[in-house]
Amino acid sequence: MKRVLVAGATGYLGQYLVKELKNRGYWVRVLVRKNSQINLFKQCDDVFIGEVTNQSSINGITKDIDWVFSSIGITRQKEGLTYMDVDYQGNLNLLQDALKNKVQSFQYISAINGDKLRNLKIFEAKEKFVDELKIANLNEVVIRPNGFFSDMKDFLKMAQKGRVYLFGLGELKLNPIHGKDLAKVCVDKMEEGVKEAIVGGPDLLSQNDIATMALEAWNKPIKISHLPDWTRRFTIWLLRTFTRSKTYGPYEFFLSAMAIDNSAPQYGTHHLSDFFRKEINSNGFES
Ligand SMILES: NC(=O)c1ccc[n+]([C@@H]2O[C@H](COP(=O)([O-])OP(=O)(O)OC[C@H]3O[C@@H](n4cnc5c(N)ncnc54)[C@H](OP(=O)(O)O)[C@@H]3O)[C@@H](O)[C@H]2O)c1
Image (cartoon, rainbow, N blue to C red; front, side, top):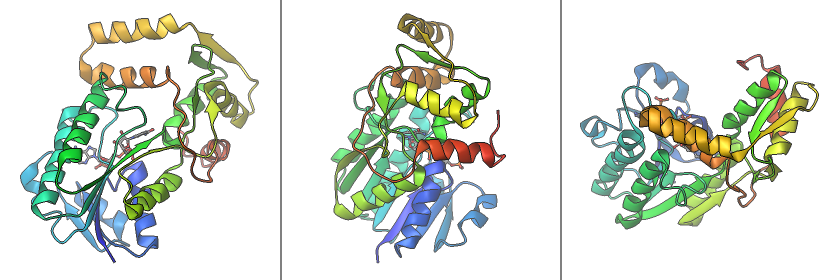
């Protein structure tokens, strides 16, 4: 059986990736940053403590490893680190160690349309790493997922207050995906040796559909406000002009991603409406 490394194992997708790999019988090493995270991975074969942004701390992390899965990335720039520091340089540090140790394949999680929206700060960093990966002397697998269910909670938060606000007509489509479904696809694509895949969930939904689902999950009347698209463009301009990239990066990403069609090939079995209801019933939902 292959020996694999999961970097990003503590994240939303990473935790499902680890479970999927262990269920399929792989030997799994995970990268964590803190001692306190070790207990999360009792089912794993090895835990490596290191910080991807500090090359010397991950020296040898890929020793005796066949495949690397990296879902390392940040949406909100924190701890004084930028997208370039983590999404690009952190992953590059990992790739350099993988090359030194003759790893066969390296899978990286970018995002749907990342290659088309390279002008956004977040994608500038992710796609710069994709460029490096594509010319590296190993097999590359680039996964471009649609929005994760975990990110759709923003709709739920708005719906809790009784009204969902959308830019434009709300007719643009996306098919968000559950982490468990995405993890299965990631491992399948690695096993199949596919070089690049765009991946979405089973249900192709308009933004209006998602807003309606979120309001229904709270048993609220359907109230959706459509803001003219110029307000979205103006907000991006204001943020870019008057704030630093650390502040505007995530908003620029969200506001731009919502203004394009994000339909992707459909995979998986988990439905967003069930996820919304579970989130509300689990008491874990924070308003
Ligand atoms: N969320 C979406 O809708 C979406 C859609 C498409 C693509 N993506 C991309 O998919 C990837 C995985 O997403 P996710 O939701 O699973 O992310 P996540 O839950 O935020 O997890 C990110 C992982 O990266 C690690 N990490 C962050 N900063 C780090 C640093 N400085 N050094 C070492 N590790 C660091 C985190 O470790 P700690 O736990 O120690 O912080 C965590 O394991 C990301 O690159 C994301 O941009 C996300």
